[in-house]
Structure formats: structure tokens, C-alpha cells
Length: 60
Image 1 (tube, rainbow, N blue to C red):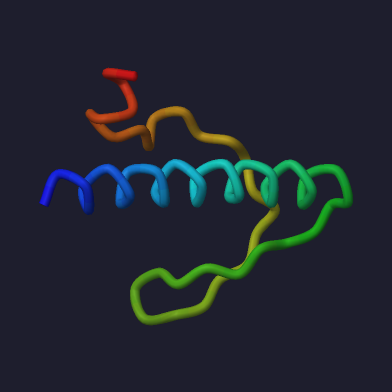
Image 2 (image 1 turned 90 degrees about the vertical axis):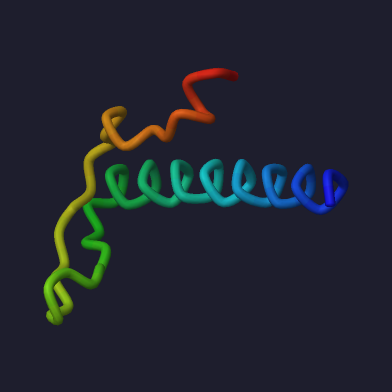
């Protein structure tokens, strides 16, 4: 179980890095990124938001 948990955390960290890079690219090229909110698809130019960190991220 611990081995799977380790791989889950590594995958989550990789997704976070990919998200950060996609946000940088969108900001650089002024692209809008679609996202789902309250049953609707919205699109906006993203901003990096450090308030969305989980407790696990704060420990590392």
C-alpha cells in the first residue's frame, strides 16, 4: 500500500508541474484556458494562485 501511495504522490506532483507549465504558456501567449464551474464551461486567461496548495505541498 505504501508503494502505491508513493507513486500516487509522484504522479500528483508531475500533474502539478505540468499544470504550472501550461499556465505559463497560456500567460505568455495570452491564451484562454477552459474550465468547468457550476455546470458551465468558462474560459479565462489563468493566473498562478498559490492559495490552492494542499497541506501535503506545504510540508514539502
